[in-house]
Amino acid sequence: MSGFSHLYYLIEAFIHSGGPVLLAITLLLLLLWGLLLERGYYFLFNFPKYQKNLIKNWQGRSDTGSWYALQIRQTDLAQASMQLKQNMDLINALIKVFPLLGLLGTVSGMIQVFDVVAVHGTGNPRLLASGISLATIPTMAGLVCALSGLFIFSRLHSHSKKLQAQLARQLTINYIASK
Image (cartoon, rainbow, N blue to C red):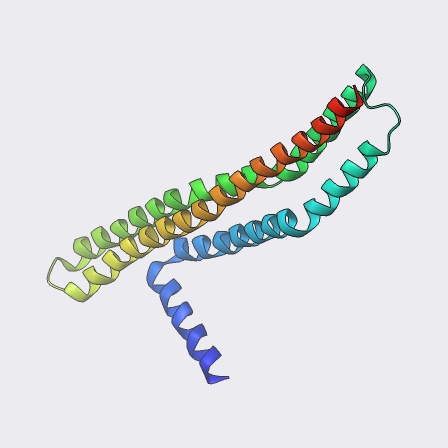
């Protein structure tokens, strides 16, 4: 258990060294990774079942060549697209917020440095260093969080597009075959 308590202490010290902005970055990072994991799980496990069911229902239709059937096909594709895009805009927005929070941490850390200089002058480098670390750590954390989320988001986004195209192709083959 001492390993977990030591790890907790290190994380707590890191968050404390970055100030309250780093705490906000940490909480949003947990939200981001939860959403990324949910989307990955959906793409790998839930959507294939949904896709198979959609194709089975489409193939089970007696009429797949009329205008009405085409509209049903378009509706099915639109619903599948909506399910694939669920939470993707929120993930994208969170990724864009991280650098801004890092910048907020920079500004608040520099304000602390200026307060220290105003009160104590430049004679105490230890006080200046704490303000500078308060300014640089959230910036670094915000950029690292944004880059890690951006990488996974781009992979999920391209996989979503691939799944949409695959479903459209499978339903189109069945639509053309019925004509």
